[in-house]
Amino acid sequence: MTKEQLYTEYAGYHQDIRNRRAHAAGIPLIVLGLLGVFSLLRIGPVDLAVVAAVAVLLYYVATDARGALISAVVFAFLYGIAMRLPWEVNVGAFILGWAFQLVGHRFEGNKPKFMENMVYLLIAPLYFFQEFFDLLIQPRRAT
Image (cartoon, rainbow, N blue to C red):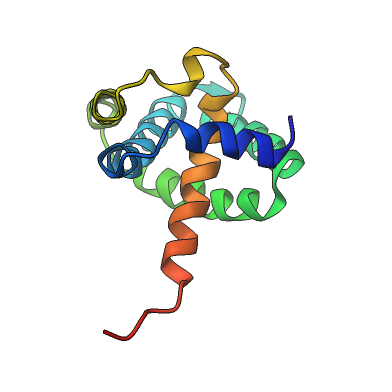
């Protein structure tokens, strides 16, 4: 699938503003939690969080280079935070993030897109981190 097809499919499951806000909170929490827990597992001198992040970012580069760059910055930021948190907090962030996702989809009235295709577990951060970045750089309208 092309980036446009992936994003169009994904966006179709995230139209309700409450769902979008739940994802805006939940996705960073899930990524934070995963990075924190994976950082505890090591392959030699490298923790699994770095290995996983690099693997995901390589997929992102193949899908959307701009989104990969934005995601790399967000991953690095979240990794820096996760490394300083106790593992229990990282696990809690992961669980809370998924709770936000499930509540958001309850508002939307549909199931999460990854239930149809697991690739959307990877697309979610790429899509939402880019969308958040775009909101940050949008020129403000005069009121």
